[in-house]
Length: 252
Image (cartoon, rainbow, N blue to C red):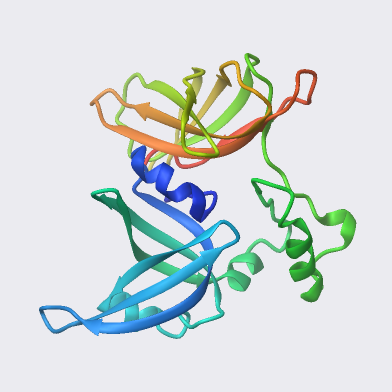
């Protein structure tokens, strides 16, 4: 299961920290096609959200499958594979889905994570247009943690080898700078036959100033294979409410 890039702005930080596959919601600005050296077609797609814009490519098979979706103005949920070429982040589209269709699969409720309060009026307006929400139903949530205080974590691990696990946490600022490591304690691991591992843990942030951050959590299995997830959170002043951090996809 892909990890989640909270926004385009955080994608570069996540990729540079080792997260290579992620899901992002974005709007198509433009698309053009060209031929590769082998003669097959390739699409180049310009995408944007409220934090920035970037370019992604899609090879012939994906272009044929998703061409109707990759039209200017379409709001999509994309699974991207990204990597570094020098200092540049290069992204390739693995799959695309209409944002409306993705939302329709969660008719019983959606949880929307935002880095700031600015997009709330836009989100509410879009949901109102579709008759999907009343004002009291809009619940925009960012996990809010307190410095040096344990918060419960729920992890989902994929393709983790049997045996003991270790975990390391790195906290990044909204500007992409390291803010400290924090402490992670793995409490329990449940493994379902043919399914993912479900891991409960606690995370204690380092001493941080109130503001926006991103938790990069690396889980290493008994074979030495590491998986990294990226989860945005905020730090409130002391005395705020405790939170549960859901870092789904701790392995890939």
